[in-house]
Structures are given as C-alpha cells and as structure tokens.
Image (cartoon, rainbow over all chains, first blue to last red; front, side):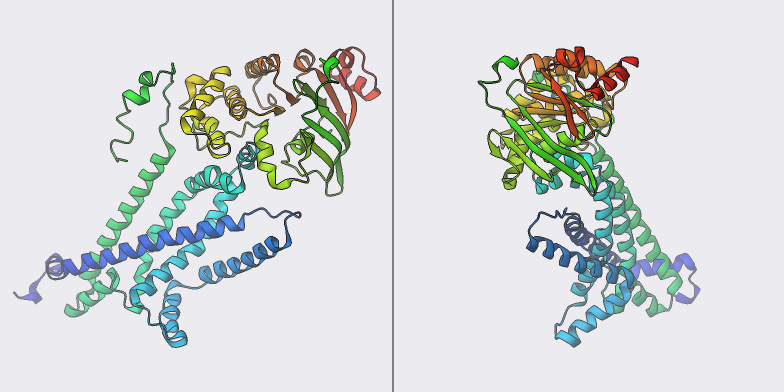
Amino acid sequence: MDLSSLSFFGWVSFLLNEYGGLLLKGAGVTLLLAIVGTFIGCIIGLIIGVIQTIPVDKNDNIIKRVILKILRIIFRIYIEVFRGTPMIVQAMIFYYGSAQMFGIDLSAMLAGFIVVSINTGAYMAESVRGGLISIDKGQTEGAMAIGMTHWQTMSNVVLPQALRNILPQIGNNLIINIKDTSVLNVISVTELFFVTKSAAGIYYRYFEAFFIASAIYLVMTLAASFIIRVWERKLDGPDNYSLAETNDPMADPCGVFPDKKRGAKYGK
Amino acid sequence: MENNIENKKPIIEVKHLGKIFGTNEVLSDIDFNTYPGDVICIIGASGSGKSTLLRCINLLETPTSGNILFNGTDILSDIKNVTKYRAKVGMVFQQFNLFDNMTVIENCMIGMVKVLKKPKDEARKIAMKYLEKVGMDPYINAKPSQLSGGQKQRVAIARALAMEPSVLLFDEPTSALDPQMVGEVLKVMRTLAKEGLTMIIVTHEMAFARDVSTRIVFMDRGVIAEEGTPEEFFNNPKGQRTKEFLSRFRDN
C-alpha cells in the first residue's frame, strides 16, 4: 500500500485498522482512572464534608473539640494545596517523589489512581460542604425532634438530599476526570492520550491520530453526561403519585399494575 | 380539668428556665408544669419568647439556666439520653419540616424504624393508623413537595403521633398556612385534644385557644405574665399587658 497517497480519511481508517485495539485499550484505562478516581474522590469528599459540618457545642468535651479543630485545619490545607496546584505537577511529584524520598516504587497506574482520587477529593469536599449547608435547617430539626442522633439524621435525611443536589457536580468531576487523566501521560500511564501520541509518532500523523482520540473522548464524556442525567431523573422519582384509596395492598395501583414508564426502561 | 391536678404527677416540670442569646435575655425564670391530659396554649406577642420556650422544652435550644424535669428526671443533667427524651416529646413545626427525600408513609415510618427500632411492617401499620386519623391515608405515596401546606402539616402531625409521644408540642402550626387551610389542621388538633392527648401549643388562634385549651399561658418579654383557665383569661384578664394584648386582638 502506498501510504503517501492516502487522504485524511484514508489515514484515519488506516490508523484505526492498525491501532484501533490499542486506542480502545487506552480509552478503557482512561475510563477506569476517571471512574475509580471520581468514586474514591467522592468518598474522600463525603467524609471531609461531613466532618467539617459536625456541630461543635460549647458544652462538648475538650478532646472532641480539639480533635475536630485539628482535623479542620488539616482538611483546609489539603483542599487548598490540591486545588491550588495542577494535577500534572502533582503526578510528577507523587510518582518521582515517592521513589526518591521514601523508596516506594509505585507503578505508574497506581500513582495515577492516587493522584486523580485525592485531586477529585479536594474539589468534592467543597461541593459536599456546599450541598450540606444548602439543606434547610428544618430538615435537621425535624429529624432531631423525633429522636434521631446526628449520624442517623445525616445518613437518612441530610446526606441523601445533599447528594441529590451535588449530583450535577459529581457528573462535572467525572467528565473533567475523563479529559484530565490525559495529563498522566507524563508519568507514562498508558491512557488514551499516551497511546494516541505513540501511534501518531510512528507514522508522524498527529492530526489524524488526535482526531480519532478526540472522537473517543467525546463519546465517553457524552455517555457520562447521559448516565448522570438518567440517574438524576431516577432519584427525583415520578412527577405524580397514585392515590391509595384503600388499605388493601391488592388494590394499591403501584402494587399490581406497575407504572411501565418507571423503572422498566433502565432496570433496577 | 384543674380539679384533679392535685392527684396527678406532672409529665414536664419547667423550673426557673432561662435562655440568653448573646447579651439578649429571651427567657427568664419560667416556671410551669404540664400534667397528663393538659392542653396548654402559649400565647403572646411576637418576640415574647413563646417559640424559644417550646424549643427549649424539646432541647432544640439549650437553656442557659434552670431545669426541665420529665417524669421527675432532670433531662438537662442527663444530656446523653437526649434522643430518648425527644422521642417521647413530639414536635410539630411551623414550617412542617417533613423530610423532602421521603414519601408521606416513609416520613411517618422512619422514626419508628430507626429510633424506636420497630419492625417495618408494624411501623407501617401504626403509620397508617395515624395517617387515617389525620385524613392523609390516600396520599401515602406522595412526596412532601406534591402536597399543600395543610396536607403537609397533617402529615407532620401524623409523623409526630406515630412515635406515640407522651407530650406533643406545636410551634405555631397554622401560621405558615393559607387561611382556608387553617381549619383542616385545627380540626385535627381539636380531635386530639378531645381524646386526651397532652399538648403544649404556641398559637395565635385565639378562638381555638379559648375552646380547646385547659390552661392558657400568656408570655410577655420573656416571662410568664399571666396563667389561668381560658374562662378566667379571656373574660377576666388580670394584668395590664394581658388586657392590652387581648384588646388589640379584639380590634382585628
């Protein structure tokens, strides 16, 4: 085959033929890094957000107050440092620093997971805090008035509502992570950008190769945003409700004739 | 009903209760007892400390001085058991405070399941019983955002009743409602009063207070200015402030 006579689309299909499998593998690594990183980041953010909003009373014992105060300072530093430095720099420092300073030989992939997670965690901590303070104080008081503990109030009443409110923010972070894990190519994580760069370098066809990469990125981000929207709609529940006219469970319209529109399409 | 006060023990005794926000003394030296079957209406002008008093009784606010005794035990010195105490003292709020992430039936069941540790099917039965009582049983699948104010408040009352508390506190339960919805909530409360539920009600509904209460507590600038039966209070008020307050109410 005479490569020099290939058109743009000719090159695209040639590269797809040659490296399609590798590119897909790279995309898989990207997706894995983004999903796991966002998930762990959310958990970090959730824990920090909840601890930051524990009410401190003057009557609480001194140990609890001191511990909370110290934790808050540590969290503040964590958030400001990881939000305030680029992820690409964090990746370099983490990967090379851990080997040089502590003699820990991290695999590039593991370093990638850690960097994405703690970076997302710093952003999510603030999102969760915002989500928690956006919930009306009346919800907490209503829960306290029926005798719930702080933990029960959080897990049953406040957090489910806060999470619903920050779900768009979680989606944002997932999409940002799908794209921004490309910076991990500096520590040679074999994600989509790294694979594309390698493939492009062989034939020196950067435009065509990155055209393919951008299409793959776009498909992944569109899918992510679609899934988040479906999830949001599912959490919101149906717009209307069915009246239960009697106590007979057999007569409950939800019980016998399930609403076909709800649940069936996306499954449980 | 006062004639048998002597041979009953009070459920809640409030003793020399005081509350200071910063430098602002909101409550000072409040003393009053609640006996089983009492329906106490706390009335008074805005800012007189009515709501703060009610919130102190439920410990949503921590009193700065004084004691609150529940069946003889001082709950302020037993702060570890505060959640157990709150489970026995129900509260209905002005802004309903229904849990927005739950349906009507879940709102009524959550306390029984999580706090009282009742099995779900039993909790459901009890919740249905009280939802029927307030006439909200057809709406068990609705979310609070899909209900009117009056409906929300009736669900909130059912939620509080489902915990089967020994005292039920009402913090201006009809103040956030449209006028045509006040009636449905007051009707429910009248039924509860007739059935002998012990209630402490902060309200601006004077006609309701006169008809339903066994005792009226009139608050003025953080102290109890006058206390008595509704007949005494409305027909023959003693204090100057009480007279002024009632005349202003009659003018409206």
